[in-house]
Image (cartoon, rainbow, N blue to C red; front, top):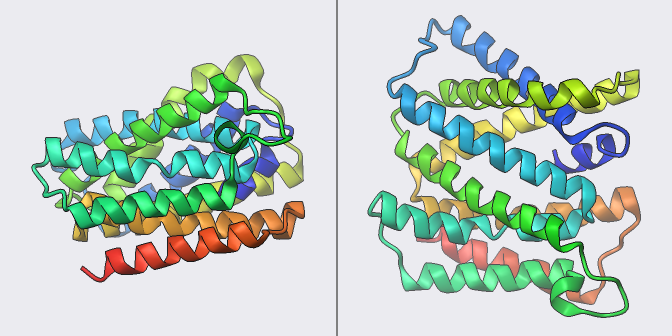
Length: 263
């Protein structure tokens, strides 16, 4: 999804990508709900609406970061969200916060930093990332943590209903921002937008199923493996071949997620 967003964002406004993604997801989830005779209202509409609002804000921040930052840097900032998820879930849901999991989460963050080595942390000859964009990305990670914790609270809700609310709220929120900057997409851009929607839909279903069956902090820490895929996409599409430090970072992430998933 991140790769397709970055490709589409070269020519299309951020909110137009958010709108297209939301329309695809809303259509797919609505079709699934109708096909199974489900109820669109859901069991807890207020929490579903809250999840939709938080998800929309987080999604907008993340898409903006992906488009305006290098893919690796945007991903590493976003993946501070599991730490925030564990902290929020401990306060809001009363979930236990084990020291071992916090240590492994910190090790995973170190691995993420080694893979991306953002200039604002490591310095070097490259210019530092634009501060406002970094803050937007970090804010999106924090809001994502709130959204993930809400999903954990909705563990008895049907996954398709959660996705439908998220997509519908995001679409409605994006429309006012899209109107003044609308750009008619080309056929290739339409394919990219469709791909963003389908990839996100499948990812959301997997994410929801994981959060419904596992404690929020632990489940989201396992998601660090995404940084490895981000590095691979960067190498294949943008020619950013990982160096030795990136390989070491990837191994740290894989090892940490393995031990987290063992308990």
